[in-house]
Amino acid sequence: MTTEPALVLLLSGPNLDLLGERQPEIYGTATLADHVDRARRRAESHGLALDHLQTAHEGEMVAAVHSARGRAAAIVVNAGAFTHYAWGLHDALASFDGPIVELHLSNPDSREAWRHTSVVSPVATGVIAGFGGDGYDLAIDAVAALLEAPPR
Ligand code: DQA
Image 1 (cartoon, rainbow, N blue to C red):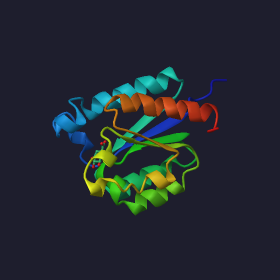
Image 2: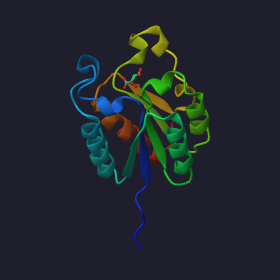
Image 3: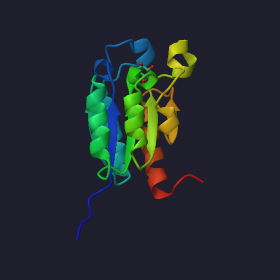
């Protein structure tokens, strides 16, 4: 009998589809597809599968979190600007049982004051921010470690 690999859901919020063109001095030159490929390869190296959704619609992201309940083992979420105000996303994530890693390419805490509030952080297991594209590998490594053994 073969068992399905555990699934990690990677969520990308508004404007992340413009990565590569959008403010490269802040977000780098890699595209979202580059980051997703990287995350998928890293997940596979840990024996995990990866699903990805990018959306500019909060309701679609909330629905994706609902459908992850009981199906995905963990969520990695770069919610883009939703991070700073989308309480519906916060509540959806609070309903998810597994590890949640909040991810940002930049370090929002070192930027404008309005980026210093995260509505995702209170329901995240941990946060990876400010490491550019390397953050995708770091987030998957964190998820793999958390799935192996809960935080000490
Ligand atoms: C971001 C940071 C957010 O403040 C911003 O709205 C984004 C991208 C990041 O990855 O650094 O869209 O989440």
